[in-house]
Length: 516
Image (cartoon, rainbow, N blue to C red; front, side):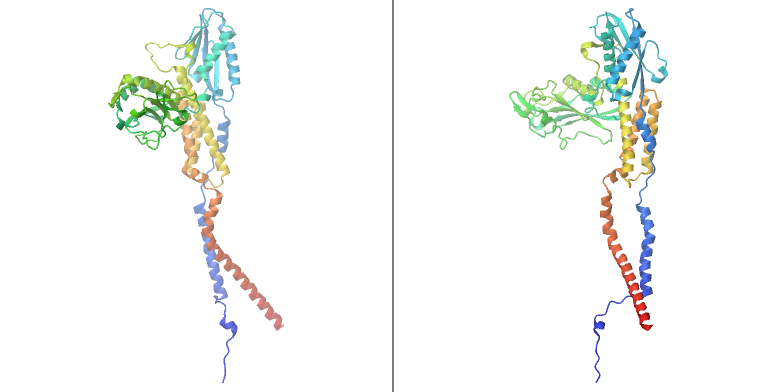
C-alpha cells in the first residue's frame, strides 16, 4: 500500500507570477503610460512666463522727471537792478532747494529772470513777482499766478529771503505733515454726506437737512475748480440709528470723547455709509447727532481741552463733525442752510486737507485779492502746485509698482507672467514716457495717473497675487499624496523584476558550472 507524502514546499508555495516575458511586458506598459503622460502633465502644469522689460523698468526708475517753472521778476519804482535782484533770488532758491533734497519737489526746475523765458513753449506757464515801493510789513498781495511784495530800502538780502520764502511756500510747500492724511490720487471720487442720529427714538432727532443747498453754497465752487484733477459724484443720506462703539465720558457740562475713543468712533459694523456700488474711492463727511440722553457731546484734544470746532479728520477716509441741537424736549428738527453753514465750512476745510490742496502762506503776511470777474475759491498757485504734486506722486508710485513686479518675478521662479500682465507693464512704461515728453500740466497728470493705474493693475493681477501665498513647500504637500501611491508600486515592481532576473541568471550560471 503506497502512501503519498506532500512536500512542505508545496503546502507553502510562493504566489504565482506571470511568465517572465508577460511580467516584463506588463511592467513596461505601465512605465510607458507614465512616460507618455509626463509631457502632458508638464505642459498642463507649466506656468506662462513671458519676458518683462526689466531694462526699461530700471531705466524708468533711474530717469529723473524735470518740471520746468519760469518766474519773471519785475522791480518797479527804480528800487534796484531787476537782473541783479533776479540773480540773487535764483541763488537763494537753489540753496534752499539743495538744503531740502530728498523730497518730491526735487523735480522742480525753477528759472528766474526779468524777461519772457525762451522755454515758454516747454512750461506753458509763467509766474510773476513784482517788487513795489512800500513798507516791508505790508502784506504780500497774491493774484492767480503772481504776487506783489513791497520794499522801502531797496533790494537788500532780507527782501531776497522773503521772496525766496514766499516762492517756496507757493511752489514747493512742505508736505511731510500732510502725507498720511491725504487720500491717494484717483481720477474719480464719490463724496458721501451722512447725517447720523445716534438714536432717534429718544426724541429730539434731526430728521432732515437741506444738504443740496449747502453743497451748492459751500462746496460746489471748489469741486468745479478741481475738474481738471477729479470727477466728483456727490451723494447723501440720513440714518436714525447709529450707535457708538464706546460710551462717552460724563463731564460736568455734558459728555466728552477722548482721543482714544476717536480712533474707534466710526462704527463700520452698524453704520451703512456707502449707499451705491462703485469701485471709486469714497470721501465720507459725517454729521453726527448724539441722542438726547448724551447732549451736549464734545471732543477732547490730546491735552484734554475741548475742541472748538467739535470735529476731527480721519486720514484718507473723511471728516466727522458733531452737532448738538439747541432745542429742548423731544421735538424733531430739520437743519436749514443757516444751521449747516458752520458745518459745511468745516467739511470744506476737511475736503481740502484730504485732497492735498496746499494752503497759502500765513494770513498775517498774505492778502488775497480777487476781481469781480474771477471769484475763485483756489488760486492758480494752489491748483498748479496740486497738479504737480499729484503728478510726481503718481510717477513715484508707478515706478515703485513696476520695480516690485520685476523683482517678484525674478525671486519667484514659478510666478506666471501672462500676456495681460506684460501688456499692462508695457503700457505703463509708455505712459511714463509720455509724462516726460508732455509739458502741459493737465496732460502730464493724465499720463501719470494712467501709468499708476496700469502698473497697479499688473501688480495686483489675480494670477500673480495668488502665487505670492503659494510657496514651493505647498507644491510638495499637493503632489506627494498624489504621486506616492503610484510611484511606489511601479518602482518596487522594477526592483523585484531586476532581482528575479539576477537570481535566474545566477541559477543558470550555477547549473552550467555543475554540468561542466
